[in-house]
Every structure is written in C-alpha cells, then in structure tokens.
Image (tube, rainbow, N blue to C red; front, side, top):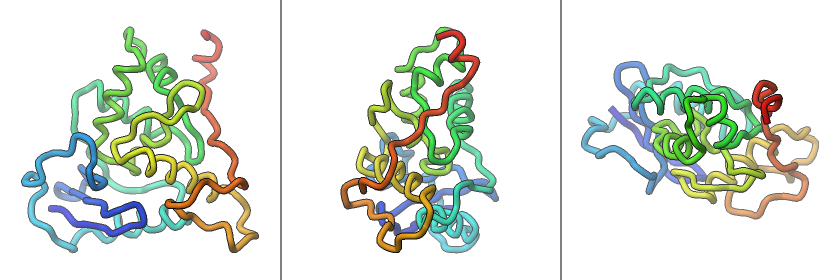
Length: 191
C-alpha cells in the first residue's frame, strides 16, 4: 500500500508493508523501485507517518518513532543503521561511516549504499556529506539535501524571531550555523 504526501519539498511517496514503512521517496528519486510494487494507493493506515513527517518538516520533531523495514543487502542495512544513528542537526561523512564499518570498505562503497536508502528523511541520509562537509549526491537532489540540513539547523535555533522560518526555496539564512559533524572518538584516535 502507498500514499502520497504533498510537502514543500515535493510529493513524498510513502510505502508500507503491513505496519512497517518500507519506502519513502521523493519525486525523481534515484533508484526507486517499480511503482507497481507499491500496491494500491490509499489514505488509510498512514496517519502516524504523515503526522510525524509533517511535524519534522515544520521544525517540531527531531526524531521519528515508526516501524521501519528498509529492504536491501546486509551491507546496505548495516550502512543504513549507522546513518540512522547520526543525531538531528549533525552530519557525518562517507569516510567516517566506512571506517566504522571496517572490512576494507571505502567511502565510495558506503556512498553507493547510502544512495540506495529506501527511506529518505526517516533514515537521514541527508546528514551524510563528503569530506570537509561538502554536499554530495542525494537521492532527492542536492537542493532538498541542503533544505533538510538547513531545516535542522533552524530548528535548533531559539525560536525568538518569527521571521526565521524554513523556506526550502530560499538561500540559506545567515543566522543558521553550518551543520556540525559527528566525530566517532574511536575513529578519531586512529586517524
């Protein structure tokens, strides 16, 4: 079953299997499954995921509490689990994830797994950046990646200025700090 959620970032296709969310895709998403696998479109049974996504996009939610079932190879699922651990408002790099996974993985292999994430936003692959904080590929497009990172930074700011609102189509406001990078202390000791 699936539904479509209109948002400021485009229409999100939400796919579920039973109670679990198995897909969340932007329009023109990289590597989407064949839409015929989504099942029938319905509005029923998607209330909680719709509510949580709307709260997140409004800057009122920093974590999701949903049953997720991303499907992919063992390596991809391991990468997605690490991505899911990146805290709201922070970033990590493909290289950091590769080091944490070990097994002689390189950042490109991690990037390929991140790019196949079937649960954009819910498994926050927008928080994975290139070395030095450079924005690199995103299945929903770099404009959306920047908008999600900006949203998280603006959400962390004190809400004293009513003019500071999330505007994904406008340039980044100078009040927003650049995303913070998560540093794994174990990785830092071996760098």
